[in-house]
Length: 175
Image (tube, rainbow, N blue to C red; front, side):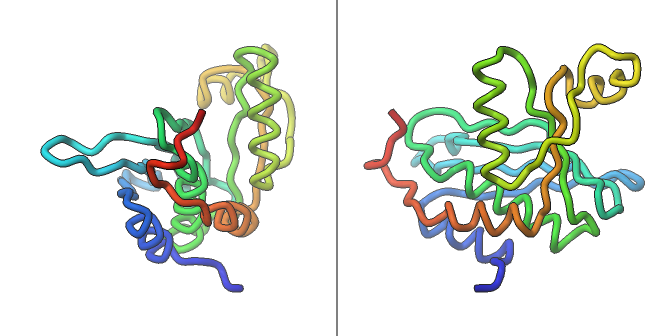
């Protein structure tokens, strides 16, 4: 099976009753990205279910992913849609073929969960980012210490797309 396009991922989101939107801004050689999934509501603004923020340089290994958040009830499948859209966008709109992120180390339990989650998406550890002077630039970029990880965009798209099969309807609220 071939990789889905961003348009196909957006169609899947619409079929599941959610809005998938990308905000892309370019400034010189930097492209910022915000991917949002929201549930439309009558007579109210859409309800934000999840988002991812990042930025890219026009280089094969220059997609930097920063904030990933899924919140509220009825969010099953939201993360998979966000990841699939992010990787599809990178492959279609940038020369980026791999992405980096930091599994932040706020507390040990949450850190282990993040590392396991990112590994399921195909990310592999690069190195620990800690208190060393050489780590200061990375700590400034990601706002803390943790495990720096890299993932292949094609593999991440394939893995997240397989997880997009779940429905985002009211019967599948997260417990």
